[in-house]
Image 1 (cartoon, rainbow, N blue to C red):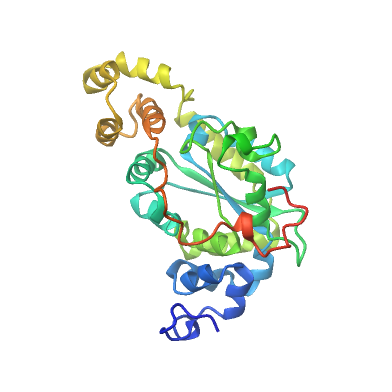
Image 2: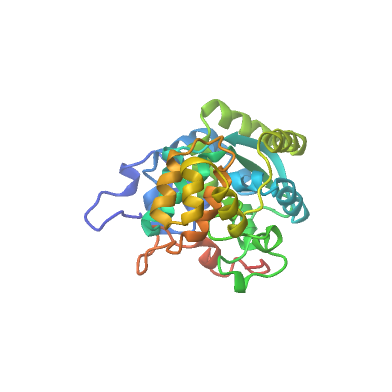
Length: 318
């Protein structure tokens, strides 16, 4: 029996989530102990607990707001389909302060203050599209779909990326304009679906997973609507400064003076979401942000792509 702490009662006394489900959806005992008492995973088990085996063949890729303005929505879907990931559902939602902290709950302990503040102004800028993906390559006993997709995402370090990596093909701009968030492993797929979806929406996802619904037309309709509402942006730092400098009022004054990160974050928070210069501000903020993580601090949960069930990642690009 796993224990949260040498002096703690057994996990089975703290949660209704069966131990065999925890063992199935994560390789990490540390994560199993944390997620055993996580309310979002608990609700996900209410929705998907009896089809956990099928959910091992499901991955989630969230296309973030910059994927809309950077026109990476359709390329991302194409790349995913070429890799064998086909959408069975497309969930659109807008991040707020709470969902940001809940999706990244177990990673934010290493995030710098300015990274969190930057995410708070970027992610609510427009809707995120969560693609629920069926892995055509998955078979019972194989590496879970979420782990395979994470291995195809590619390293955060640009020098280590290969042409087949999703980050390379999408042309990641910087540490925050990276266009996608991918759930690490099955436990995260389940948990994050519960963060962004209520019970009726999870029930629809469940039906579509079981029916192998073709959500490509749904996704393309969402993409078209988002792109009609949000003009394309180049994410070019100098061009963004120049456009800000030509703007009236405080934006123009800041663009001509080019202040530091703190002041630009403050200005961005005060600027309406529908401002013509919203993405100029966000581009400047992401380029000014130099400290992404806190040195010497490790995340609450380990990196699954590097260490998932040793020996079971054979044949998966990492």
